[in-house]
Length: 328
Length: 268
Image (cartoon, rainbow over all chains, first blue to last red; front, side, top):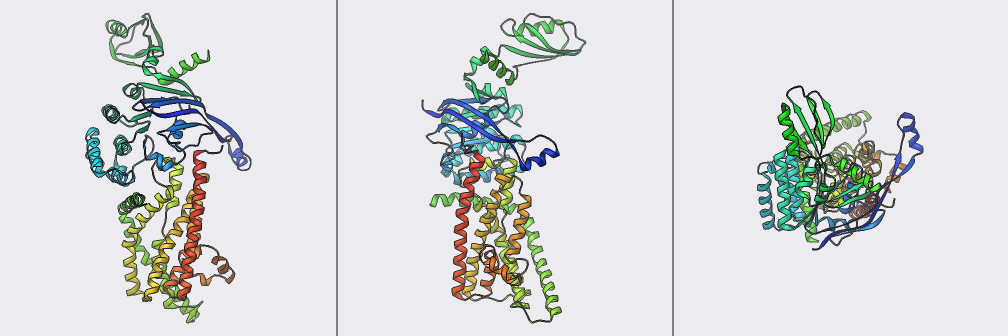
């Protein structure tokens, strides 16, 4: 398969100004500012093949968005090289971005005062989409995402989730080879999230579109991506199949249990109590030593259980674990 | 070339549609413009009455009224909010969405402004011309002057756009430019002769203004209509307008490149 993106020893150092709090320091900073160098990326290497859906994750300030910016052509790196679809993204920006699609979960990308449909027709001309294909693709996407009514309503009157779906359509209409999704599932309800993810997988299969997804939602990662790249402090700490991460690091599950009655003493091998009060219990379960089935059985037979939630530990915890092991 | 024209024409259409959404705003503007015209009318009427003079600084009273009617008309053409759009985008962190869109930054903004303005023109200019002819005795200029007036006014729009665009770009460094924008608006209005004709300025100031682009935004087009220059003089004035546009365009391209590099964090 063809390589779509190749990133080589990418580095980025920002110059920022540090200012202490307080009025006096604010005045002082007008005259003399302390310059601080921030190393956002410290040599990032990876390559992505056509048709992959890659999850790009990391805690806040890890260098995720800096990498995405460099890949989408709006950031000059300090050193290193990027080859994306045969382009150097930050050179010849206009030509390059015609070949990609970008969805920013947190930023408006449709004309605020116009219905999404108007933006689509504008994009048809801007991206030179043939009318026949445009109509076919648009109708197909509108049906899949269930936004028949929505696309006729001015964007400002839409809900966050509706806007997100419409933005996704806008980013995919020109059938780009490469799509960046930055926090795409913000504002979507559970049903919409499922539809949204199915839709992306469908597009991926049909057109071999490559997706790079940055997200904090583990659900997105599990449903969409076969491969994940974890970045922290500007370095890649993990790059590989998600299954491996699951096996090696997702060895624990979190059980949130709520009780109807005052609870008795909980004791089960392979389980560690993280937090407890009279009606609630948070358990960390080691899946090597204990099965979830057993634990739930034990809970139900011995307690008056109101609710059990089983979930993976948050992504930040996994990153910490990987990071700790790397340093050893 | 043709295909890129289509891209920007589509963008202009979007600007036109956004403009349509603010129809109410335009109708209000349409109603208030003649009101300020009436205010200027009576202000100058009392000035001419009080001084008892026929001609003040080369203007008879009817010529002065003509000047203000034309000033209103030019004012619609040269209306431009690009600095507002750019600084809003920069401050809210939305400008990145413009950069992942396959259009040239300057031309995207220009096309949008043209779309927005073209609506205002149709809604406002015709009524103001009619009001001018019927109520304020606006004289019909010779055909050559009318044509050159229209040419000059369209060039004035490009000049205003480029000046405003550069002010907008400053937000890449300064972030908040509300103050600068206010200064920009007042300066453009005052130095282009929008408040009082430039003939009322001291001789030395007028000389300085000849070497600046501002008088070409309003004063020059108006005087072209009022046949204040010879036919060759008109062509020279329009030529200087074009030269300013080329100069400011090159400057805009240069500053835009710097702004983009600043945004992209180049050379750090």
